[in-house]
Image (cartoon, rainbow, N blue to C red; front, side, top):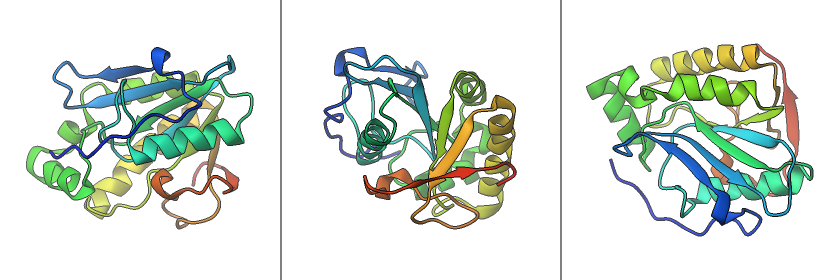
Amino acid sequence: MRIGRTIQHAPAVDASKITALFSTCRTWRYRLTLPFLNRDGALVTVFLKNPSSASETAADKTVRTASEFVWRRFPDAGGVHILNLYAIRGTDSAEVGRMLTERGEAYVIGPENDETIAQTLANSKNAIIAWGGHAGVPAAPYDERIRQCRHVLEKSRTHIFRNGRKGSEKYPFHACYWGYEDELTAVSIPF
């Protein structure tokens, strides 16, 4: 899988305290936790499609945009957790779709992803769904994966939001394309 370029984490992120939960082979990234400088509040969870190049030492465009957005929109937030429907790392979602077809759903989801998602959401007050459409991934398994994660979101009792500017009824707007002035809309399950 191709891993794209990296950029610096957002200025609001305390780079010395970033943690990431990777598989030992770093094929899967289950969670990326980005604490904010000088803030001690609860962390907001942003739920994306699949991880790319972001790690403990560098961001990618999506992670930087999401963390900057949360910092601006949630003034009491102490940072952000990044979760993904699929934990397989790859910049191009078409590669994720190819791996799903070749290696199966369990492979692209990752062996520890569902447990990490459930644990993180159980301890989150607010979550923003931002996985975007199925582009690159076959629609039927993508929709099934969303259904599985929607069930975990429902059990978590966290407040769920999505970007209100764009996206479709079925798929929330992907965080890579958010504007910092975009508004969030509360989401009720089922969504």
